[in-house]
Image 1 (spheres, helix red, strand yellow):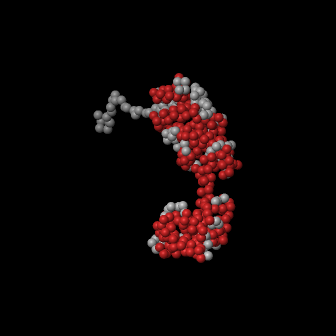
Image 2 (cartoon, rainbow, N blue to C red; image 1 turned 180 degrees about the horizontal axis):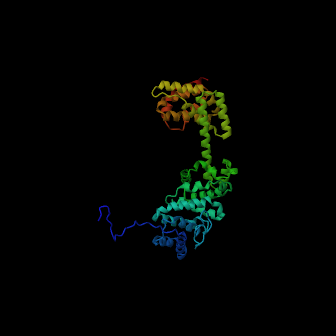
Image 3 (cartoon, rainbow, N blue to C red; image 1 turned 45 degrees about the horizontal axis):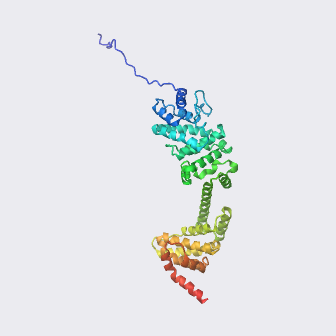
Length: 411
């Protein structure tokens, strides 16, 4: 052999690397097999679940197709809700009666399937999202069935179904403008609240990022606080109406407090502050008692408190009372409101250790500035109902009350 020739392996077989050849997708055959299981068991979901469990069907590959069969009785055409070719069964969610009692077994059945095959939750999300985004393609009766199923799915805590999967797809302009979404969400609320509390519903709405945006379910012509109350009152969902009214009320209070805080920090003329409060009271229809509470909170929040210097704290509090006495006096227009102001002072002094000893001085200052009447102070002293720190504060106020009583006797 020449030194330049290279050796060869005569007759040796060269091994080639094996390639994974994927089987072609065949969702039609899968759907037909699932439909046959329904038909063989006459729609008995207990038996259907057992047959599916014992089958060797490829759920990991055809999860979406499986839920299409569950919801509509067979495959749907890609991107639509229209039936595709192939076998169908009459035991689907869309084909059943639109009642809670009839649809609940389907939810429990799906729960069983998900417990054994938790990966299918993503396929359930996919199919539900697609159907909810295409609600206008369903008949009104079919939309109601989907709403009932969705409510029961959350009520039964269907494994891992996130609320945003339901609520966010509903916010398509064309669905909202036609009133389809409002009708769907109303049915959803009604069914869910049968077995769950309003707090449970609010929790779901929060997780779905909808608690602050409930009006987005309404067509633009009805998108108002009045429209909300009118619609859900008519539908018998009074607790939801009351909750929404409370939320609106809290927002109005927060906005007013923010506006006052800014004006006081900027030392705006007191007459302008009074006008601001009056206008907001008129616009928001805020009750007088809440105004008194807000005014005191805002005034005291604006004080620069000292950590340990009690005398400095006293001077700061009394200076604030004197500066803004006219503001307080404008809205403490009767004995009830004056008494509420005393209770606010009591609670603040009770909850803040550095203010504990200032209670009698603040009350005396409010009296001197004609914010509190003598009768109000005496009523609190003799018949006050708030127990927080009362014994301590009554004792601290005794000298001042004694002076008032003596002055009254002299007159």
